[in-house]
Length: 72
Image 1 (tube, helix red, strand yellow):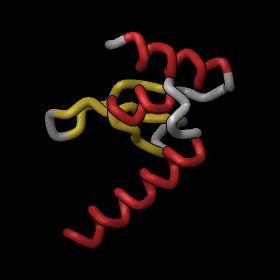
Image 2 (tube, rainbow, N blue to C red):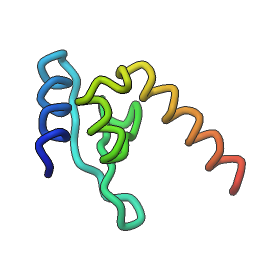
Image 3 (spheres, one colour):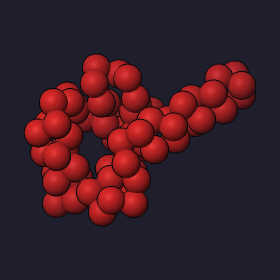
Image 4 (cartoon, rainbow, N blue to C red):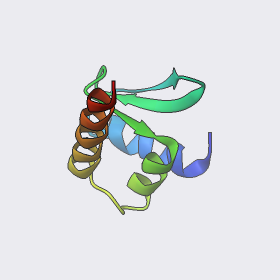
């Protein structure tokens, strides 16, 4: 796990969130708050860099999830 992802996980935990690695179709994702959302490694790094807030990551997850549901 790279340092930025570790920083993002620690920051989320300090805020009372749960985070666990999740392997989905051979790609690691990070499950936040028991499946409330999944974030990619890149998104977790960007969370650490403050490119995204947790609310923005949740919006990205909802959009991605809706697109995936529409493609099935």
